[in-house]
Length: 209
Ligand SMILES: Nc1ncnc2c1ncn2[C@@H]1O[C@H](COP(=O)(O)OP(=O)(O)OP(=O)(O)O)[C@@H](O)[C@H]1O
Image (tube, rainbow, N blue to C red):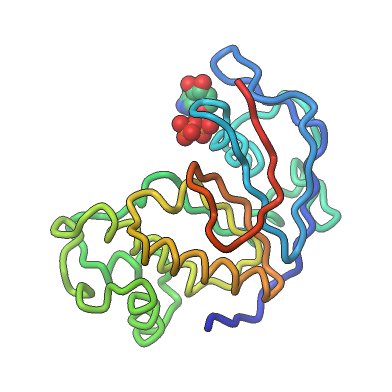
């Protein structure tokens, strides 16, 4: 089981957010909170702005208006306080084809020991592919390399954008187990997914077109 001493507890307050993209309001006056032990699911149809909302919280998409507070700090003034305590996994796994599974994971987590890296690959059932170049791996296997980071991190707040994409049933189960352990350990997760969660009960933030 995954048990880490997390860097911090989590209290993210999102208040009255207004995000505009491509001359369309993705949200207006959107407020919600994310605290230790909580799973928050951003729901909505394609194009409603789920990924953009995560990126806006992280400072990669412009906010028109609104307040963001992380553990009492104004995120717009002290973005590093949030960035240092979060782990973001985006839509694409971001794997380098010429490197092996193990080398790719090492790129993500240069501070991890060889043993820890191998254990993380084992958690995502990739130990037999540690030395295989990513170019020779399937889409789901590449996704698993990215997800192996979750077994190596001590960041308290995870942003997972469509993490189940390309995963098979066992992969989905393993990821939900990992997420559940993180929540029990005092972590917090913001997730976007079009798939229903099998074992976890999220708080939902719904975006509409
Ligand atoms: N780089 C960009 N520049 C301008 N507009 C963008 C950009 N990326 C996305 N958008 C627009 O922002 C809106 C929201 O996109 P976003 O990717 O956040 O939606 P989503 O809810 O995550 O969609 P999906 O369920 O398909 O992943 C869309 O109308 C899209 O066209």
